[in-house]
Image 1 (tube, rainbow, N blue to C red):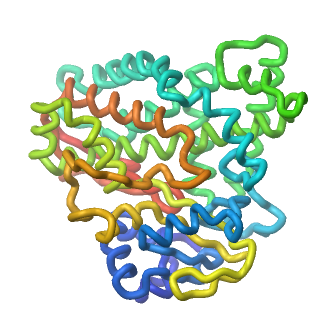
Image 2: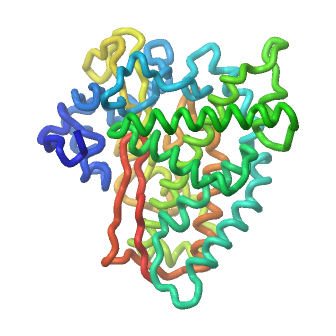
Length: 403
């Protein structure tokens, strides 16, 4: 069933649909409605799921690894396939539960420390300047900031991190869209993309076994746990995670930030005049336009917000809803680029908090800075079509601007 063929939502508390068009465009009003009436919503759509909307409930599930497993973090099942027999491949550490999660995560942290991320800032800045040179070329007055800019940055940064040729990034984008963006409605294409990814990364692994390079693939090949090297499947699962998680989430965040600046000229002018606000502005964009929702699977019956979640049922960790909770954020539906206290959970919380948050922040900061340096005046193009993706990761897929 296509998105357009599904019945409309008339009761967001008991029949929500994360792929409903208005929800993908702006979920905040629905989150507010649910939070005020029935804070933990339920649906039978997409295989059934529960959706907490209060900050405290989302955080409690994220921390409760005893009752909620990360073995399947997918927000949407894959229509036409047997979910039990087509489990997503392991992608440590995001799909790992304790006690294995501890060492799965510890292995990759050195590559994402603030110091380690510095090495990629020069590359990212040069890339952004190159992209902007094309956008502001003489005679141009229109651009798609999502397609031509935001969606070009993370794939190339991840390619640099993994150690693969930059020309392969077009394939990375196709795989990411097939798995995350379109997988629920096009399961066969998703399976093909998954197989192609695995073939590609197992091939990369064999190449690095013959010749090490300065990249995370070689780094993982040299790691040992209890005196033994990592399994090839573990390394490939981790690299696949870096690709899928590192691309869509970050380009969605960059795109959402540019959409905000295109539609809020006062904030745009202030950021240009007060560049020191960039860090706090990025944190506020992350809070207000959090792109990611993750899932957990109940490993036992458990109570949540007055409801009984049965073993095997999915719970959606709606970080975007948590970040709009008025109990934790003053004026939550306003974007305050100088917000002083901002304990958002856009990167998750608990043991699965995003290991790549330092890299994502750097990419956002550099991307916004270089865009404003080259093009301080721009607005949404009323003749273009603004479109969004949703489900696991929400953000603009086309962002037509005029300048």
